[in-house]
Image (cartoon, rainbow, N blue to C red; front, side):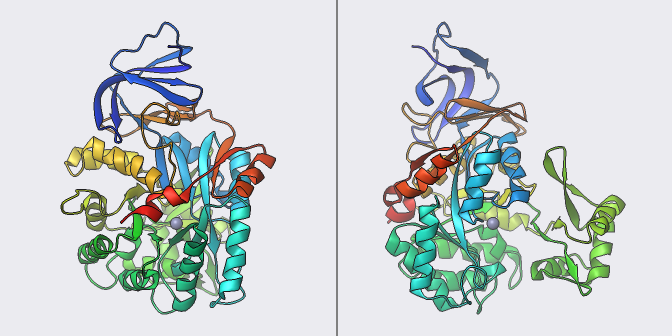
Length: 469
Ligand SMILES: [Zn+2]
């Protein structure tokens, strides 16, 4: 059989068939054409020996941010660590699609469109009609569904429930960064989210963020989150493995404009004001985000302080505020009986924020004995593919998309990225071009084609989001 790419001698892990062993993978016409212990290299255009590496379906990041122009750099940052497909949780969807057309690095992208009360609604209590119009516009422009920004810019609890209801009625996707005008982005907000969803389908974004220890210990909050998600399987979810967050370092009238930033300063023992911020940067607690050499880097100490001052405080900043015990609980919790994971996927909430550490930290969890490689691969590929209804992704079986990530089994460092049969990354160097949009409607998919992108429609009716019982 003729292959365009033949990967020889890797440890091939396929969560769909349960395969885990030394095999070859042949790709033809952008699809997985064969997986077998010994495929002939005679007819292959390109043969890559991946002995000593793990070969898995292309990594799918189920929660990223690449929608604003400053964040388009996130496409290459993701591709460089082996991400092949990602779902943007920012929007507006028009920006995400434009970013994909400009900087897509050959990746497949789906996007959610944000509902930001007061910005794209008239107030914090939008009506069904207003929300319906926003959803229709988003789907026509290529979105998979809606994102409720909650914690950052909350709607009323009633309006939040309305957004979920409208999305469910239309059969599109809807994700929630929990928080309303009544409850914050914390474990209380998560309890409220479960109630607001009722029997509707809802994606709970980055579960870790509600387990930072604001009400109980982080571990106790994570255990409660697990219990809530175990007993409400109409909710799908992801959690991340990064210890840092991402927020704004902007100061106005002597105070950080972001309330998240103020909380982070308090958590580090600094005063929640301009002076505290300066000290936190000099002291190494606040890490200033700066674009360098084609990626976002974190700089602290005197250098970070200078960058922050020179930018008139208009920079992004990260703090190491995410609890590792909560992280561990959420990454590993399983359902009794079925053994399926309680939190469906491992995500990053990264993209342009330098915390695309799912493989690196995932490999660390494997070294620790907390997950096996096949379990990690399931949470990075097949589970997110099913969650969003990406029917031909998440597996290394014949006929599936030719999406492959090759990684070092000890460090988790990605060595090779292949997207729909094209090599997009080799040894950390991104070589992919163009992009592919996964849209909910024909109209949305057609919009992407106008920008020179390829595209396809996703049947959300078959997704885990809508079918799990
Ligand atoms: Zn996010």
